[in-house]
Image (cartoon, rainbow, N blue to C red; front, side, top):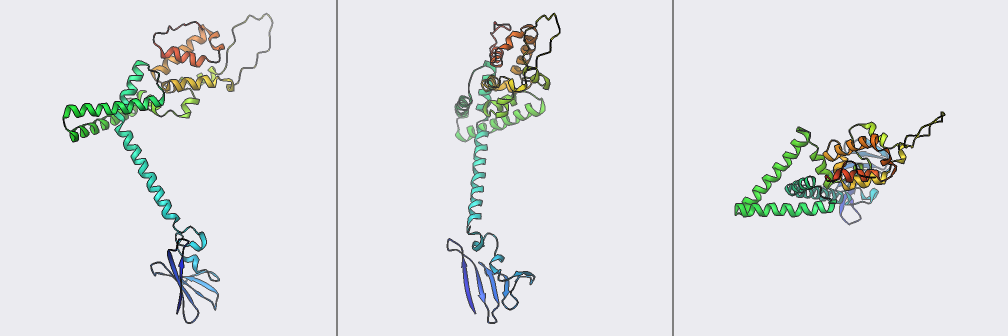
Length: 296
């Protein structure tokens, strides 16, 4: 009885084909488990249960997909994919852990920015959050006078911060958690769509420029209104980039923006002749000291 060892491209043994005295061939996997046989007289390949698998010698097709290097040539690719998935999961877990530990500093920096109207970009927010988190832990270390105790207290503080954000967002429906997320994770949706109101019709009104009222003595055909594609998108995107809270419907800055917009549409329609009006209006709302009716 002769046997032929099957190996993949890396030389790893993946199976064996035995040729019996009557010419019948039997295939086994790397562990010696029988997978099927081929009868040259009938030219039929059958699996381990005796069912017809196909016409001709198809023994190598009975090998498991991860071991059939004669067909895929992949060899150990599934193992590599599993390793990649494992590494990705570990990185995701590490990122989530770091985010959890930075929550106290992130919350403090976001609250300070919202209360003082500081003009910080995303990079500055993250940098200040890391420094603030480290400062909180050092303060706990001085207070508790013990490394392990300070770590335990800081972990508890991070957990309370997370619970507080969940309660504020899902419980009391506060706008701050949404603004908090926008400060650190500005999305493309917030940059393209200025959520200046919860009224879906207002954005459509913003996109149509109203000319100054004129007195007409004879009826004239109405001018075709500007299409929504004429929205000063660049100014809107820049406004939300500078002030992420503007993209959170119901927030303090968002509410002020909507109120001024509606008032200016009635009292100062010429204000909207400038394509940069969304950015100008956002600046006015962001600075409490700016009068409500500044000169255009």
